[in-house]
View 1 (tube, helix red, strand yellow):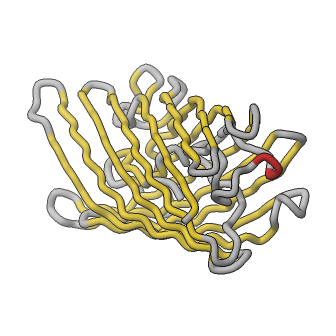
View 2: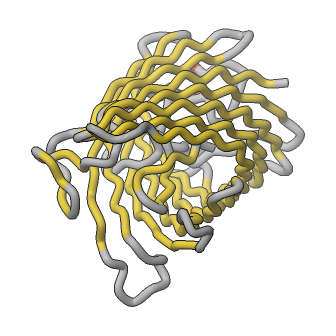
Length: 284
């Protein structure tokens, strides 16, 4: 599971999981520590794997985002996640999130918000990449906080080539957010992730992520989606795995190749210029 973040007015998208190409650092199963099914160093893309029946894990995320065109912007999030393997094909997760943001347009007062939310996830593994040429899983992720609701359906693909892990995610998200008049506004996003990963040894794994986030001002079920912007991100990831826990760190920067509304010098103006995340994961 990944942290859900605000991208722009009324739109929520996954933090680090929003991507048209994500080259990630993964690890071959023979080198993996006995920790998590989701122990690849991906801070934006989920592999098509689940925990075994009865296995449990806890993950702690801390993420930070900074920079908008034309204004000062900072965002901070924490996410505490509990994972449980219901069967060898089904994994359930529950997360508690805290989100703090501060934006100050030039010449205008600053606006600060802080929210506490809940996010859950169910992953059903259709095929395992350890047994089949292509692994496939389907994830459903509802999320709630006092001012927004979100529902994402994600297709997760994984395949192994030598010591490299290839991961593709295709995410479909619908979101509902309250405006200043307490009226619900709908929006959506379509996100593609592709990942290639390599382990340096049994402890260290490195990688890089590329991301594309396509935002729309209506639900995906609508006839006319009303495209807002298509935003791209890229950055490296690093993971250290030991018997006690797995530690992952990653940084992404927005690439100057965005398209759509509110674009300044190739950047989506109200999307963060860069963001980073730290994750600590451990089986319990």
